[in-house]
Length: 600
Image (cartoon, rainbow, N blue to C red):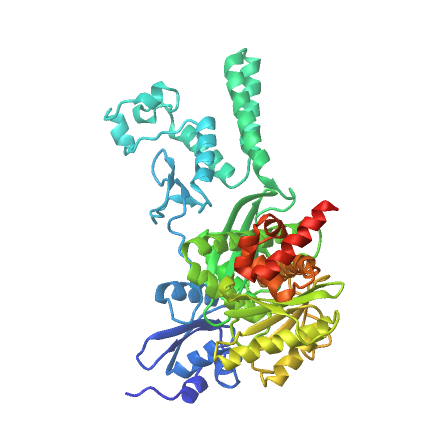
């Protein structure tokens, strides 16, 4: 039986919440999505023009639509998340796997052990985490070990086995680290009281444990057991010191999850902060690879569902930076000021920091991916039609109108290509005229590239504001390149980016990678131009001194400087050495000139 066409399939969809799945002609899964209203959501893919090329490609491949109706929006969120992880559709956001992160496990057994693990086994045990590093878990375990006496052995401490005397206490008992439940020297009730206290500490509730220890210390002191009281006092100090390291936000903020997202062209990063008893007890960020130019809202909604499910979060309220769909049972708060707003801002900073660290790792581990991401980001930020793989930047250099020169630096894939740098002596402009000079060098540069059939850049940057930009545009118009190469100007004072024909400049985030690349280009062009200008002034000054000698012209002066490198070397050279470059007659003139100068 053939599959009905798409229009028929859409008409039969219900106006109910659920999850839809798209398949191609080979029955391969393309996409999984959720909807409050299945018919409206699916129809929207087929009844409008898509700006995103990737969405248009996906829609063109859809041959079959399947759907699952669910009872509520929350169920749709959870089902969508589970299906994406299970089926891994080609066009869905891809979640980075966190299986290698460390967890703290309270084992589901009689007299539970507490230990570090990287494997989460669904056997009824409790898992806290994942934590960002092994060091964090080890610090927490050291705290627990210092406060409570727990077993570390793997014995099955079933009551009947203990009663038969199957086990004997080990070295840990004799060292005072365990109270010997294996020989029935500790009751299950007292042991489980310790486990409950550990549970609260891991969740950020230090209050009950501190109160218990303080009460124990008071009782021991009253009974004249001062050494034992001192040991309890030391435990209180350890616990208070650890508590002080927790990021305390506001004691009134309790059992709240905080989420935020930052993204670039290719990836999204969703940060999660868990608050309990006024303190942050967990921070975690997940990386999500975009597939269909997903919005920040879409990324955050998927991230919230994934993280809350992963950590089995019991919180009934979440703080987020903008409105999201999180399910009917969850209260969504968008703080505007105060401590609540501060904690959302902190989450955003954590997401940005994670993104920055990933960039650093990417540059080392996968430079190609870093370049691809940077180029895609620059294309988006600068509103270009293609990625700026080849960029050229121009800068004029003249001091009081003397020795006017210009420089062109070339970046390929975001890095300097120094072999392609070019210097220009201004030939057609009289006096210090930056606008005319810019038009001349841009024209000369691209006329030559066209004549030699060399590759043109995707982006030209001119150092300066609207005036320099207009000059660059005129040069491109003369070459019939207007509209074929993107061109922008950057003004130094406020780092404004000017576009041809735009009244107002574009301002990029001061921390954006795109602006940093442009600043690098501009600074490199300025450095290269200034160096060339300085060298030219120096050579001209030296040449002028030689040209003051009767009978010595500019060409002779240049030849001598090329050979001897400096006036000092020329003065100390023999007549024969100078004659080998400029002939006997001119060598005689030079030697006589400097002899007379020495006599004065």
